[in-house]
Image 1: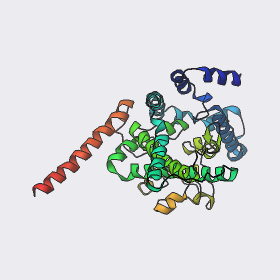
Image 2: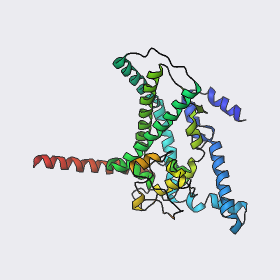
Image 3: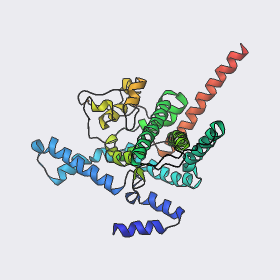
Image 4: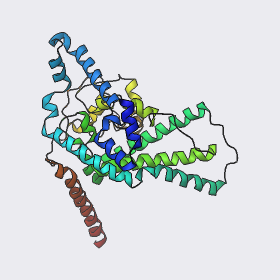
Length: 336
């Protein structure tokens, strides 16, 4: 049946295919809600319940479901905003994909390649495309993409105007897998642009020196790291605390570290910006690895976003006020 559905999807025109993938993300391996990742997430948290709770509370289906999907978490107003944001951003993603935005990495790559050819001349030697070279290319592609996402996230916190757009994500008062889609379009746009731009530069430089197009190692059309990462991605926005331990957490971002990032505590606001790797945070002095489980309240303790309209509109208003205030100070300084 699954093969029949996949064949049906492939036969659709591009526009209808995009619509289908948004309407039914469980069939899209590029989507975080793809049924394989979701099933693994559910099985994992059921396992967590069995290990942590069943001995004291007993193991029953109703108890297990209540532990894994607490009603108070999934039905609160903050969660409703998550769901609404997911739907709206899905529609916007279709519109953006039709503009060719996601080909920016290839455009950037071609520009960099041509620039290097003009500067140093075309490379005459063509390097043999071996498995080892593919592994090297894929490894650095993963690092480049992850750094692009990290840097965008860092700037979203550090630049006041950008923070107004990213704040919508941090105002979530509970973490569930759909919270991972609760982003303002400007927030998403910056992260995607940084990721695609950095990747394009890397592709152009690497392609110039090997004198051919290099294909990364992929699974289901995804970089192998992205594919594997999606098996734990739902845990980043969930009520389940999962730590990788002190040493491994200095290499990879654990779900627990991202919970710290969402904490209401002011001292954690600018900690753990990484997506896959933690060493970017270590290099920028923003890492915090919890030694033990911490009881956290997530959110910012603010109430600027009570409905979906405010979530999309208020950031523009606040950003405008900040820019106007800054321009006013500049004008005043020049006048004096």
